[in-house]
Image 1 (cartoon, rainbow, N blue to C red):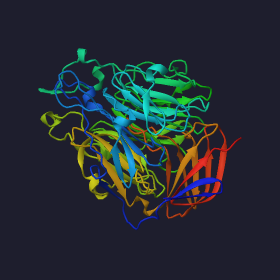
Image 2 (image 1 turned 90 degrees about the vertical axis):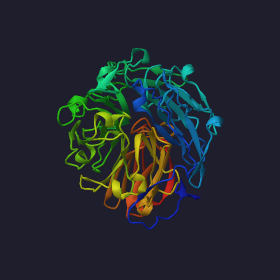
Image 3 (image 1 turned 30 degrees about the vertical axis):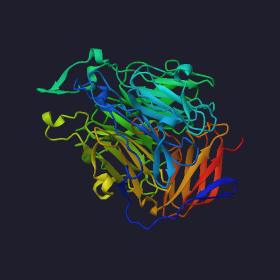
Image 4 (image 1 turned 45 degrees about the vertical axis):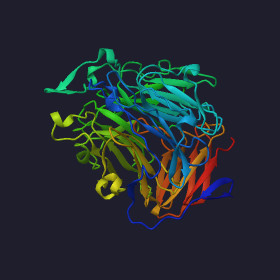
Length: 545
């Protein structure tokens, strides 16, 4: 990769697009040097945390321009006699390989981990790491060169609830990153309830235990303050499994969608004055088209139909369809799951992660779903399904519909695992998005290299905020390349318990240039760049007012 400067922006030149007709995902986990096995602590007592974890994060921890990988692990629960292991930090060495630097990084937490969130909360130029746990959470401050120290207790963030998913954003637009932590349910092994499916012991349904409220931490510069109640976020119980920020109503500030398990989903609309209003039911995203509260798992926001508005995708439990909510504007959504071709193929699977990504760089957001059942003995009471399941990839046709291309997208997509979390990023810097999948009850997790996604043109944006937060999280980008117009937002947290490459990759199809790039920063500053050649990464610096 070479470097040069063009018109005041930093530019990294990558390899030219390869000649390929159809991208293929190839499983390269061991080849890449990743030897990690997730421990769920399954004791036979069917404790609820065993079934739901865990996540991971793609981020550049040491500032060398390469994506490192952080993987969250479980732990032993009462009665468990198997091997355990800490969370793991894998440093990207380049050339598609990683080295285990867990010990040197200081991030080998041995608590029962769930999710990871990345953000430069202290604005010192390096990425910090938040880990949501079943038990006290961790906030690892990066001292530079991927050396971390837990500062959660000192900053008032060591919440002892059941944290599952977390996401950084600047909800109040004051230039620093705040944090939302989604909490799941009030579970204690001491009060474990025995449940069964017929005569077979099984995990209890989510309604067995009361839910927990999420927490919004406002960054006050020297510490974080729990402002959940005072800003209007609901403090009554949800059963939160995913929390995704985005400017859903297009007014310049960050709204929050929360996916709840067997509770109505929440849509917290940012009022622009530091408060939120919950409008999920009014907007049409609290319930699916059948009027049911979903068994919602992972979720994501993205403009799949390129109309300039952020839509919502939600992964759900088996025998329920993953749900696509189209943003109709004016604060309203329509469930178009089956009309878009996503309903029928998803019904036989238990979806955990659902995420938008442009895997083939054609400028239209596709959908990836990580599937895997929760119960290792599900065959004993439901012979129609399996514990390991195939993940799914749905290609966006560009006409509002999707095609299931799982079976034709490479050997990596044919693997059946108990897949839960998945994160997305270009770890080999070749211009297309790769996928890491956190698998439970498997010899190792799964790294899927995207081979051929860079056959179409692309542009990658690394934002550098000045008045806005350092990584430009929440910035809205409108890219015009010929007749292709797409609106995307810079963010890291989406899917299920994970954090993704904060760099924004725009697929451009056959277009070798972006004619005009419009960037609206969280500060409100607007920036316009013109005539940007494709197939490169650019660093865009927020201009002064």
